[in-house]
Length: 185
Image 1: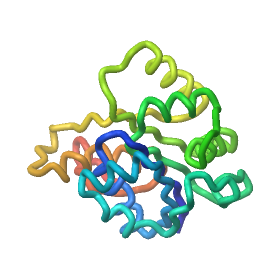
Image 2: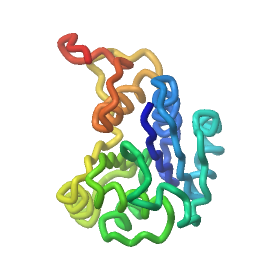
Image 3: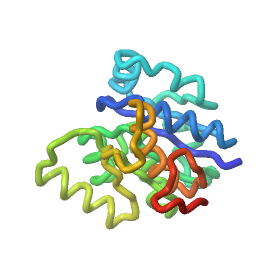
Image 4: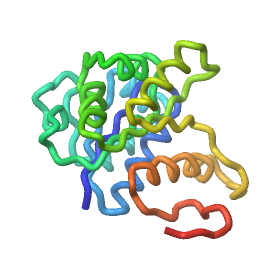
Protein backbone atom coordinates (compact mmCIF):
# COMPACT_ATOMS: atom_id res chain seq x y z
CA UNK A 1 0.00 0.00 0.00
CA UNK A 2 1.33 3.42 -0.98
CA UNK A 3 0.31 6.79 0.38
CA UNK A 4 -0.81 9.53 -1.98
CA UNK A 5 -1.73 13.19 -1.57
CA UNK A 6 -4.79 14.44 -3.43
CA UNK A 7 -5.23 18.18 -3.83
CA UNK A 8 -8.69 19.48 -4.69
CA UNK A 9 -9.14 23.15 -5.58
CA UNK A 10 -12.13 25.31 -6.46
CA UNK A 11 -12.18 24.53 -10.17
CA UNK A 12 -15.31 22.87 -11.47
CA UNK A 13 -14.91 19.14 -11.95
CA UNK A 14 -14.87 17.83 -8.38
CA UNK A 15 -15.95 14.48 -9.82
CA UNK A 16 -12.37 14.06 -11.13
CA UNK A 17 -11.00 14.36 -7.60
CA UNK A 18 -13.68 12.15 -6.06
CA UNK A 19 -13.14 9.36 -8.58
CA UNK A 20 -9.35 9.61 -8.25
CA UNK A 21 -9.71 9.15 -4.48
CA UNK A 22 -12.19 6.30 -4.98
CA UNK A 23 -9.87 4.33 -7.28
CA UNK A 24 -6.81 4.91 -5.11
CA UNK A 25 -8.73 3.50 -2.12
CA UNK A 26 -10.16 0.57 -4.11
CA UNK A 27 -6.63 -0.27 -5.24
CA UNK A 28 -5.50 -0.39 -1.60
CA UNK A 29 -3.75 2.97 -1.26
CA UNK A 30 -4.00 5.62 1.43
CA UNK A 31 -5.30 9.07 0.48
CA UNK A 32 -4.47 12.32 2.25
CA UNK A 33 -6.78 14.98 0.81
CA UNK A 34 -5.90 18.66 0.82
CA UNK A 35 -9.02 20.59 -0.09
CA UNK A 36 -9.01 24.37 -0.39
CA UNK A 37 -11.96 26.37 0.97
CA UNK A 38 -13.29 27.02 -2.55
CA UNK A 39 -12.65 23.34 -3.28
CA UNK A 40 -14.93 22.37 -0.40
CA UNK A 41 -17.63 24.65 -1.76
CA UNK A 42 -17.38 23.17 -5.26
CA UNK A 43 -17.32 19.59 -3.91
CA UNK A 44 -20.59 20.30 -2.08
CA UNK A 45 -22.18 22.27 -4.96
CA UNK A 46 -21.36 19.56 -7.51
CA UNK A 47 -22.61 16.78 -5.23
CA UNK A 48 -19.26 15.05 -4.77
CA UNK A 49 -19.17 14.78 -0.96
CA UNK A 50 -18.37 11.06 -1.38
CA UNK A 51 -14.82 12.30 -1.94
CA UNK A 52 -14.37 12.48 1.82
CA UNK A 53 -15.42 8.83 2.26
CA UNK A 54 -12.24 7.77 0.43
CA UNK A 55 -9.85 9.92 2.43
CA UNK A 56 -7.72 8.58 5.26
CA UNK A 57 -6.60 12.04 6.30
CA UNK A 58 -8.02 15.50 5.70
CA UNK A 59 -5.57 18.00 7.20
CA UNK A 60 -6.43 21.66 7.53
CA UNK A 61 -5.23 23.49 4.42
CA UNK A 62 -3.34 25.96 6.63
CA UNK A 63 -1.59 23.34 8.82
CA UNK A 64 2.05 23.53 7.79
CA UNK A 65 2.86 21.02 10.54
CA UNK A 66 0.92 18.30 8.73
CA UNK A 67 3.07 15.35 7.71
CA UNK A 68 2.73 15.99 3.96
CA UNK A 69 4.46 19.38 4.37
CA UNK A 70 7.76 17.60 5.00
CA UNK A 71 10.08 15.94 2.53
CA UNK A 72 10.82 13.37 5.24
CA UNK A 73 7.26 12.02 5.00
CA UNK A 74 6.85 8.89 2.92
CA UNK A 75 4.36 9.69 0.15
CA UNK A 76 4.44 8.05 -3.27
CA UNK A 77 3.20 11.15 -5.09
CA UNK A 78 0.52 13.78 -5.43
CA UNK A 79 -2.26 14.70 -7.84
CA UNK A 80 -4.07 18.04 -7.89
CA UNK A 81 -7.46 17.19 -9.36
CA UNK A 82 -9.06 19.55 -10.38
CA UNK A 83 -6.60 22.44 -10.34
CA UNK A 84 -7.43 26.11 -10.72
CA UNK A 85 -5.07 28.32 -12.67
CA UNK A 86 -4.47 30.34 -9.49
CA UNK A 87 -3.19 27.27 -7.66
CA UNK A 88 -1.22 26.18 -10.72
CA UNK A 89 0.40 29.63 -10.82
CA UNK A 90 1.34 29.49 -7.14
CA UNK A 91 2.85 26.02 -7.63
CA UNK A 92 4.82 27.30 -10.65
CA UNK A 93 6.12 30.24 -8.61
CA UNK A 94 6.96 28.13 -5.56
CA UNK A 95 4.68 30.28 -3.43
CA UNK A 96 3.68 27.84 -0.70
CA UNK A 97 0.87 29.87 0.82
CA UNK A 98 -1.14 26.81 1.88
CA UNK A 99 -0.56 23.12 2.59
CA UNK A 100 -1.62 22.03 -0.90
CA UNK A 101 0.96 24.24 -2.64
CA UNK A 102 3.60 23.35 -0.03
CA UNK A 103 2.98 19.62 -0.57
CA UNK A 104 3.30 20.07 -4.34
CA UNK A 105 6.58 21.91 -3.78
CA UNK A 106 7.79 19.02 -1.59
CA UNK A 107 6.96 16.51 -4.34
CA UNK A 108 8.95 18.54 -6.84
CA UNK A 109 11.97 18.95 -4.60
CA UNK A 110 11.94 15.27 -3.60
CA UNK A 111 11.43 14.21 -7.25
CA UNK A 112 8.15 12.46 -6.48
CA UNK A 113 5.38 12.28 -9.06
CA UNK A 114 3.25 15.42 -9.20
CA UNK A 115 0.27 15.27 -11.54
CA UNK A 116 -1.74 18.42 -12.16
CA UNK A 117 -5.17 18.39 -13.83
CA UNK A 118 -6.13 21.93 -14.82
CA UNK A 119 -9.87 22.27 -15.37
CA UNK A 120 -10.11 25.83 -16.67
CA UNK A 121 -10.10 26.86 -20.31
CA UNK A 122 -9.18 28.46 -22.59
CA UNK A 123 -5.54 28.90 -21.62
CA UNK A 124 -3.85 32.26 -21.85
CA UNK A 125 -0.10 32.74 -22.25
CA UNK A 126 0.44 33.02 -18.49
CA UNK A 127 -1.32 29.66 -17.96
CA UNK A 128 0.78 28.01 -20.66
CA UNK A 129 4.02 29.46 -19.28
CA UNK A 130 3.12 28.25 -15.78
CA UNK A 131 2.38 24.77 -17.16
CA UNK A 132 5.70 24.81 -18.99
CA UNK A 133 7.51 25.87 -15.82
CA UNK A 134 5.93 23.05 -13.80
CA UNK A 135 6.67 20.53 -16.56
CA UNK A 136 10.32 21.60 -16.58
CA UNK A 137 10.37 21.17 -12.78
CA UNK A 138 9.14 17.58 -13.12
CA UNK A 139 5.35 17.76 -12.89
CA UNK A 140 3.02 16.14 -15.41
CA UNK A 141 0.16 18.28 -16.69
CA UNK A 142 -2.93 16.28 -17.65
CA UNK A 143 -5.73 18.57 -18.80
CA UNK A 144 -9.22 17.25 -18.06
CA UNK A 145 -9.59 16.18 -21.70
CA UNK A 146 -11.37 12.84 -21.78
CA UNK A 147 -11.01 10.40 -24.64
CA UNK A 148 -13.88 8.89 -26.56
CA UNK A 149 -12.40 5.85 -28.35
CA UNK A 150 -13.46 3.59 -25.48
CA UNK A 151 -17.04 4.73 -26.18
CA UNK A 152 -17.94 5.76 -22.61
CA UNK A 153 -21.64 5.42 -21.88
CA UNK A 154 -21.86 7.63 -18.77
CA UNK A 155 -20.32 10.78 -17.34
CA UNK A 156 -18.46 8.59 -14.83
CA UNK A 157 -16.95 6.44 -17.58
CA UNK A 158 -15.90 9.58 -19.44
CA UNK A 159 -14.31 11.05 -16.30
CA UNK A 160 -12.53 7.74 -15.69
CA UNK A 161 -10.61 8.15 -18.95
CA UNK A 162 -8.84 11.12 -17.35
CA UNK A 163 -8.55 9.46 -13.93
CA UNK A 164 -6.88 6.43 -15.54
CA UNK A 165 -4.22 8.72 -17.03
CA UNK A 166 -3.70 10.40 -13.64
CA UNK A 167 -3.22 7.04 -11.93
CA UNK A 168 -0.82 5.86 -14.63
CA UNK A 169 1.39 8.90 -14.09
CA UNK A 170 1.31 8.36 -10.33
CA UNK A 171 2.71 4.89 -11.01
CA UNK A 172 -0.50 3.10 -10.03
CA UNK A 173 -1.28 0.10 -12.20
CA UNK A 174 -4.99 -0.08 -12.92
CA UNK A 175 -7.33 -1.20 -15.64
CA UNK A 176 -10.35 1.03 -15.08
CA UNK A 177 -10.39 2.00 -18.76
CA UNK A 178 -9.56 -0.44 -21.51
CA UNK A 179 -6.14 0.60 -22.84
CA UNK A 180 -5.68 1.36 -26.50
CA UNK A 181 -5.11 -1.83 -28.49
CA UNK A 182 -5.89 -3.94 -25.42
CA UNK A 183 -2.56 -3.43 -23.63
CA UNK A 184 -2.84 -4.33 -19.94
CA UNK A 185 -0.73 -3.42 -16.92
